[in-house]
Image 1: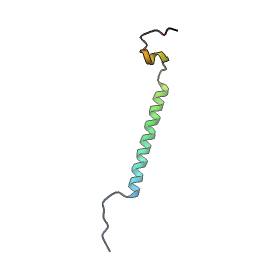
Image 2: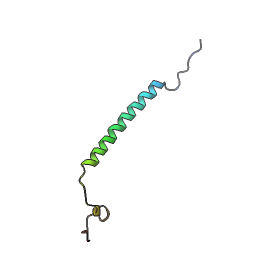
Image 3: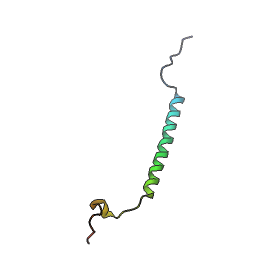
Image 4: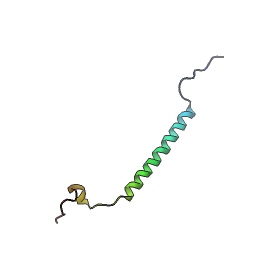
Length: 57
């Protein structure tokens, strides 16, 4: 019998790491979208002028 090399990772270890990374990514995306949904909305002219000027039609 030959001795097996112990270098590298097994497939199970790689799958576990990928699953944990996917969970962290999902939680992060949900947190960001929840934060964006709850922010106060500003008028469109505030995005360009900084709301320092009044919008003249």
